[in-house]
Length: 204
Ligand SMILES: Cc1cc2nc3c(=O)[nH]c(=O)nc-3n(C[C@H](O)[C@H](O)[C@H](O)COP(=O)(O)O)c2cc1C
Image (cartoon, rainbow, N blue to C red; front, top):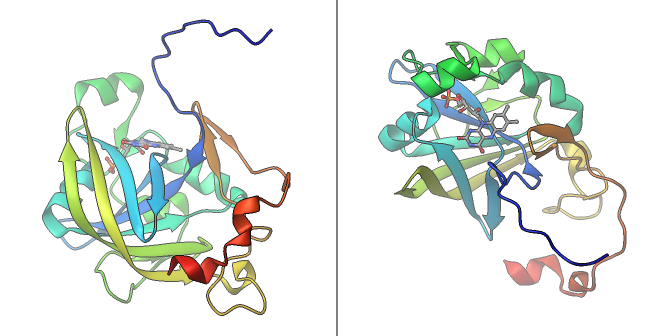
């Protein structure tokens, strides 16, 4: 049966990587927020935020962030951050959904902040990939789409492809995926894509 039916889902969370966005608060401390509306084109990252997000307020002001990518092994750290906001005022929608204010989200997640090279926001030491980035544009409608340029890439050595100075090994890198508010990992490789006939350096 290949025919479609029409449905009207309240959300379209069809499966994207979870990132933990570090930003700098007004008092110089760090905020950390799980976000799964994230994709990359070249070195441009696009992230989707609700308008009440404290991270968005920080991004409007500082124009800097770190996009930390937890592996599937860090699902518990990510889940500890669920239903929290760095905003002191929790709006009615979030409050009804069970959100509460939490100031020290690095501490809550049990992740260690380490100083970044270029931006003021710290990166999370335990995340295998951490991307320092500068905001280029914020498009606000019902949500905010933040477009940022990645300016520094940090990886744990065990996700780097051996024999290549600047490549991530997709067999070693195990992203955490969120699909319809549930966590998944990746399965095994299905097939080497024909796109891989293009050398990665060709994209530089
Ligand atoms: C796994 C996961 C993924 C999430 N993805 C998003 C997202 O893509 N965009 C968003 O605005 N909120 C997302 N949220 C909810 C935010 O984490 C939430 O709005 C939070 O209050 C943001 O923190 P902040 O207010 O300190 O910035 C997600 C939450 C979890 C746990």
